[in-house]
Image 1 (cartoon, helix red, strand yellow):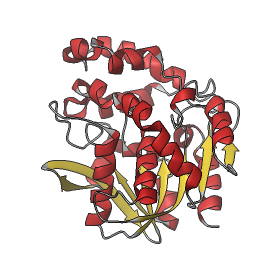
Image 2 (cartoon, helix red, strand yellow):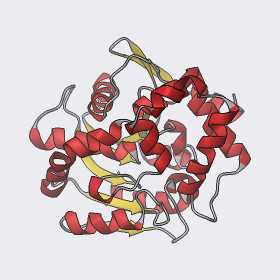
Image 3 (cartoon, rainbow, N blue to C red):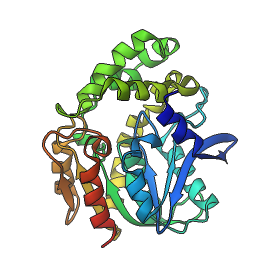
Length: 296
């Protein structure tokens, strides 16, 4: 494993969630901030902004079930609701009562579910109160989300189950890499070293075998869209969207839909060449707009 990933893993902890080991990092001091990573990687997505975040917050960043350094059971019903349950259980185990939320990609859907539970009194574990939410690029409105063709094929058709035994091979890497590169801006393409780290995260504990199953959260977005949006439109929790406009999945078009749907929208558009992973492509800008917002 790459030394940076090994160091990240070594600095973490595990907690028991329904008999499975969930990896998480917790570090810093000050108000609690829950950092909810996206698909298909893990909490290491936050590594470039981690030192600055931990100067201002007690940052809690788990790896979701099926991803990163957490358990990756094959026979498991992966869902946004279950991911939300896990985050609630972790906050309860840590005694957190008030928390800022920073979410990206799949993490946006988990954040939407957590917000809906708070708005409608439906928490599964504890009752941690969300104080602010910062959204990064993600499919918050299913009608505006445009996933890549490979993502749809793997998660919404039998293809994922058919090719699952081949995951982790050189062929799977060659198939995956073009899709990942499409998600980055033209001037922020991942280096060979970064791409290797991505593969190591995905392949840890045979993780590519369940990648397509975790990816079936796209169906949850369709099913729960109206409930999640109703919570976002009615909440008093301050929210800010920080968006990389070059993201083909949820870039400028998703930000435009956010402005249409959310009352009094707070939207920050990053430089035109920033894509789907703003915290990796433009970490300083993300930090600036996040810290300015969450400290108001």
